[in-house]
Image (cartoon, rainbow, N blue to C red; front, side):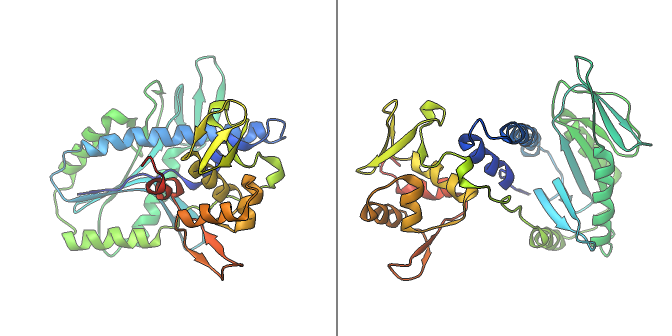
Length: 326
């Protein structure tokens, strides 16, 4: 049994950083906040479904992979929310965290959502998306004769699933175990050995194309420095003797630097120099900036005067052991 841990999408991390720092008067403030709201809700819905996998009772060895981004021969992407693979079949799961009444039209290939207040909205049809992913995986794994199934899971408990075609199963998250049981009963023939299952899993992970950080925006559009969480990121904190202190509310923290540096990594670039650190975080002393950079043992290139530090992914987790309170 292998169940992957679902990581936050890079775009969501980028939007989180931008949400903390973008000036309210920016013309795109509302646009980015709505993007964050939608993506954050989608991620929360996916995590809700993930809990079901850990409670799964399965008679076979299996793998569960999340957020796979695969490229087809036309160089178009297939983003799979979750992929379940066992020795008998493969199941593609598309997850939607939306509420209201949901009508899936098989002729227009559209999902129509009616909110409780009567507002009607159109969404891309998750059923059509799932069928597209199924066809793609059938091409990749045609030599294995492995049955490929698909399902759409609605993770919002208040959603009402109304009309929908019978082409792809669509149900609430609570129905996942029952649906898998029906597939276990349908597919009783062993197609893959455990070795082949491992090979397929590794092949998919090798083909996976991780999301990239969105295009950087002009730093003049957002607040720089270490920002105070107690002041809703409106006030800047200043560095002295290893501690960052808010000039407005006097809140002090050592660890807050990790969040701020991660913001820099996503919004500016994944490398930093002594000069760039001083300018962005308002550190007046070159020696203090140098001590701060050396403290976290970041990998670097270049000589002492021209040193460029490379900021690792998952920066907050990376920096945690270096703080005195850890």
